[in-house]
Amino acid sequence: DAMVIQNPRYQVTQFGKPVTLSCSQTLNHNVMYWYQQKSSQAPKLLFHYYDKDFNNEADTPDNFQSRRPNTSFCFLDIRSPGLGDAAMYLCATSRETAYEAFFGQGTRLTVV
Amino acid sequence: GQQLNQSPQSMFIQEGEDVSMNCTSSSIFNTWLWYKQDPGEGPVLLIALYKAGELTSNGRLTAQFGITRKDSFLNISASIPSDVGIYFCAGKSYNQGGKLIFGQGTELSVKP
Image (cartoon, rainbow over all chains, first blue to last red; front, side, top):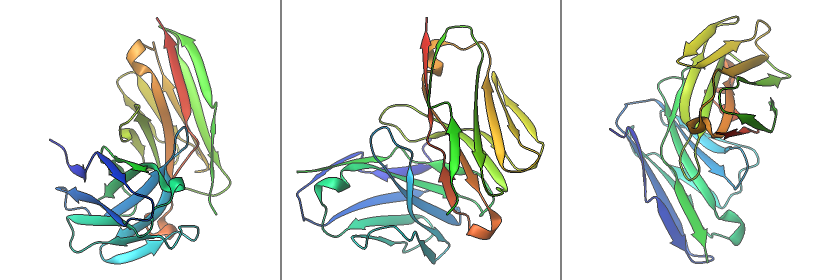
């Protein structure tokens, strides 16, 4: 059974049109992460939450925002997608800061 | 910021051969993780390491947490065609609030 669920698997959005990607978890983990992964590259951390504490990476563009309304859900908002934002977006969870992280299947974002 | 250097970038091996890949860092990590990623999917956790010197196996996979806490290796014995994919190391430090960063990945190809 999937424990970290990302919806949708594939998302097509128009240039400049806001888009939201969602992630849910059934593990009751404290930490949730969002990564961007471009072709043939490693996942790049955008931000992560420890409970409600938000930790933004210094090089994450302002165009990317996140919300975590409760333990189970976390959203990635891209306010004005550009062509360069086309990528796989990965969500992951971890029970505590030191423990292993589990990933969802990802959302492939296409910007047209 | 922290960086993980993973090598080799790619490997082409014959079925049945053993494989070794490693990650090094200029700073200490408290947790080392190894993942495998198939095309279009999220990374899948293979092995988690929590203590310096720890050696852990998962079937044909063996990984070790380096004594200095600045390196880790992954060995795959008797490779099979389904081992094909991209392998990533990832690390966490206690003083980074659960932040998980990735190495550049090792792409493994197995020739039957």
